[in-house]
Length: 228
Image (cartoon, rainbow, N blue to C red; front, side, top):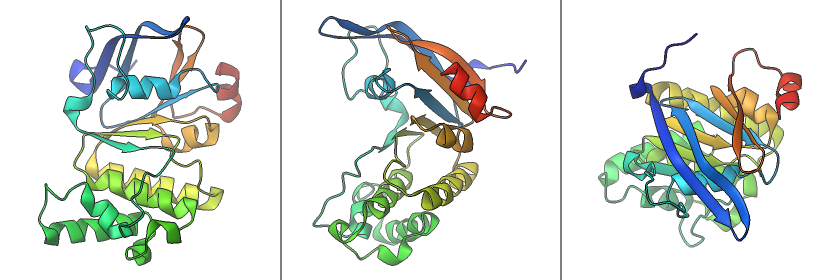
């Protein structure tokens, strides 16, 4: 069995959340592996996105004795691209690092990440000129240009067609081999989970529990379906 050092994990404890009379999380704890792609999967409505929102500080935890991951520095890739329509693709990406790097470095990094997601030729386009899939690729490039230690992804490939999705996911993994960031990745798509992740966390029940943590080496779709 693999020996786990405390330095290799991000441990989040005391997660509690209630909406009206429904208890979603009760004294929930989860350990994520640093510099790996941690995939959270489960049936629709099981609390996957809520978990990301709590641990990132977007929505409050119900108990005060709780530490978010904000101090690590976080980039987000949401289902919606959240681009600014009156800025070009390059300007949208540059905006998040405007106070961090000089103009020369920003331009170089923009070209790098736009090239990695395959849309460098669209850098002078405006978001309304792009398809949903292209806009989401801009969103992915924007998350990488920011020097964060953690990237949070909430179903980021939902609007991308199957062929381009696989290309982007493979490019995503190549970037992470060089840059070593921790990824928290929510999806309902089993193919995405198997192709992209290092660890798979299967959530279920009410209040939410971790049904299984799977090392993504020999897992098959059939086995994962049975666990979910």
